[in-house]
Image (tube, rainbow, N blue to C red; front, side, top):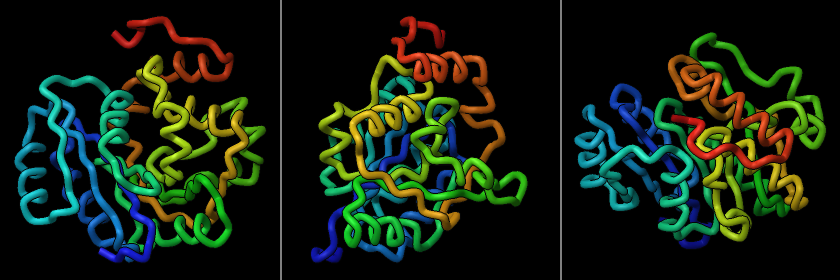
Length: 235
């Protein structure tokens, strides 16, 4: 790995994503930015996820695996990965999406050259073959955050000191943990860049957002109203 570049820790949590997992992993391994470690949490999967992870972790030393005995959810799994990460920057990648070859390189340019502390990109909708965030991209995120989630979680790249200082993801938020994080970043005046290029390919079918709409809405409303969710709502 190139020691002259800051290390980027890419975090992925997976639950029964065996059909898409390899594509997601390969998209990170093939990044043009080379100083990367890939940390993956197998959150209690019962499909072939564990076998796939063992295959790639044996082949690539930059891949590290955490296996949860039981499914504990995305929020806690990501915090486990944050605590294990060693990077100067932390990036997200979902197991049912994949990243453009130059995604990390383009995001790190903004951090290195312009001192941005967090960078997000636009995305392509894999299920509709169209770009996303067309109109909403033009709305300042400081305004948009009051009405909806302003960024796509899988595109996040952030200075690791920032997210660790905030304590990682708020574990009161079983869902919409990314929305809560963005509210905290904006409240703390973190310097954020929205990259205009679509550098991420997003699955919108049978994902967390589409399968748990009621739960997502409840937790998102808690972010908007600045209240703590009721414990156990997700059950």
